[in-house]
Length: 515
Ligand code: KIV
Ligand code: ZN
Image (cartoon, rainbow, N blue to C red; front, side, top):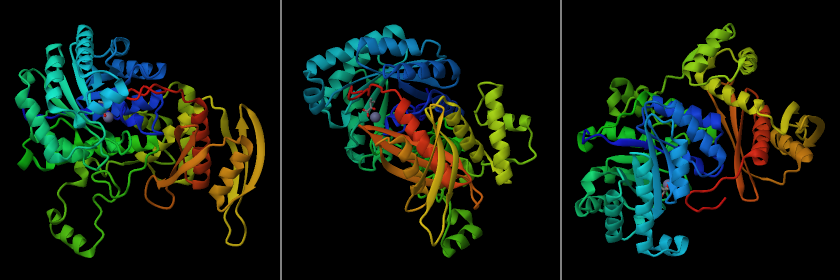
């Protein structure tokens, strides 16, 4: 293997999905997996097969669809988890089992209630068992960032002897500092006698905002795989962000002398897709994929850019896929053009009925908005899917208005299991009135913990993309809805969140073991 190549292991569909409220449907996962393949990530961690039957099926579908990336399933160091992962990956062109166990004193003592010797034994058995089922086995030392280095050396040596082909060093709680984390990787590579028989990987969390810096320090010191996610999605403060890592490696090749396989032109479209599907908006000043990442506000900067772009820009916006939001369709576009563009965006329809519904939505959108961009089509696809699910709650009719002199009111009809109920309510604003009206009927007792509106494209005729986060009994869901009218988009998002609260199956969390 090219020693300067860094393997990009994307865990958006696994660690990313562990973000509170970021759970994705089977179809959404498949769409993201296809986008990751187009982005040319080397490994897609498609999920944790033991989490739920739905997760198992999603990994199975992704494994049988994706051809160019390795598809991976996470498993605890337990035989039944590993068997389930192997089963889900059976159809994969190239499959990997990723098994892990915690190695820090605090985790071994308080979470696992195991001695270090027992942990080594369990890890060895798990890797050996996985290796009997598949050739590509990754072993992770959970909480390696707080583990004893000599213990790490012992367990990693044993895991490699048992057949692990990749060794992952996670900074699970985002505790590491770049100079110290780089030193850890260097020491492991120097001290472990069989280190040359495996690829060393890192998986950094962003609790101190250092995930990307720690990952880069690791590759400078010999790691050759980085685990990361689109938009830095992941548990708590998230994981290292794929787009930042890839662009740092590319832009600073002069210093790092490393490469990746990533097709950088797909970075922005993939980022938008993940943001749309999860309802996690991208902050405007986010590096690479934020709306302002390449915008120049001050006169001095603009003048410099016009004279010579490199005065203030170290990367080209078009190299990461900005400007690929093509204006492609309009009012006169036909069904064939619509379907073709949707397919180019990785959106396929289950049957003629779903295509007809989506096309009807497209026509009504084109009546309100003369220019339809790719981002509009992505939002439209999510909206149609939400409405097609056999949901308990759906919006039938909505009237709400704003006035400088009157209390905002909303009047709406909501269907609950097919039975329609009309309701009116007042509120501080039209959105507040709509949410209160919905709650008058549904009485969910859920808490609204986030409300966010984003313009999907530029211009005042843009669709508003609304995210609503609801929490109830420890469960968190993110609903989304899009419409040229943000009050309607808000109602759709709220109702989508209520349906998710109602339906979304509980799953086992791989690290805490809780449901
Ligand atoms: O953060 C972590 O330690 C993980 C492991 C399961 C790899 O996500
Ligand atoms: Zn993690």
